[in-house]
Length: 205
Image 1 (tube, one colour):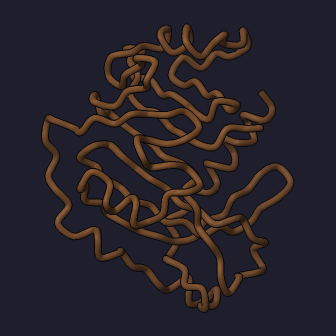
Image 2 (cartoon, rainbow, N blue to C red):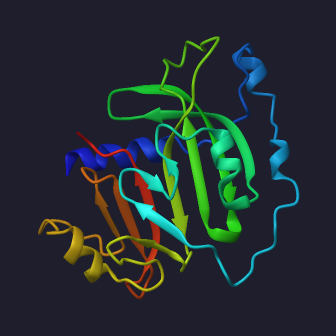
Image 3 (cartoon, rainbow, N blue to C red):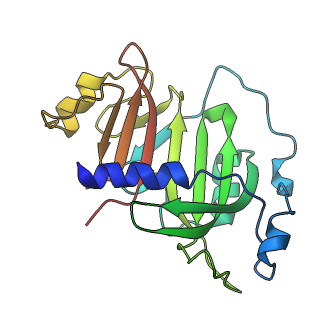
C-alpha cells in the first residue's frame, strides 16, 4: 500500500500544464512559450459510435505498445485525429522532485489519451537532448473498449474486475478505484460501480 500512495503522489504532482519545452531553451524561455501541435486541427465532433479498442494490461491497446510505439504510430492509428500538446512537469515524492518533458495525444471522440514522457531530470538541469517514450494510455467512457477477458467499459462492474484481477486486500476501502501495479492496469468506476476508465502502464517487476 505504501508503494501505491507514492505513485499517487507522483502522478498528482506531475500533472502540470506548463509551457512546451524546446531542447535548447532556457528555463526563462520555457516559462514564456506555449504551443499546440498542428495535428490538433479539425478534431471531429463527438458521436455515439466509438471505435472498438482492445485493452492489453501492461502493454497497450491494439498495435499501440508502451515503450515502443512512436508518434507516427499514434497519428496513423485507426485514422483518428488527435489534439496534440507538449510541455514540462514536476514529478515529486516524499523525498525528491524532478523535471520531466511530456507529449500528449488526445482523441476525445473515443475517450483516448496517449502520453509520452522523458526520464525525470533534476530541476536545476535541462538537457540539450532527451527522448520521450510512451508510458501511459487512458481510455474513458468508450463502451466499445474491452479487455480480452471480457471486461468492458460501461458494462463491467467493480465486482467483475475484483473477481478477475483480485483478491482485493481487506484494507483497500476505495470502491471507485482499483490499481494492479504488477499487471500494469488500473480501473475507475462511476457512482453505480460501472467501469468508466482504464489506465494502462508498465507493470512493476
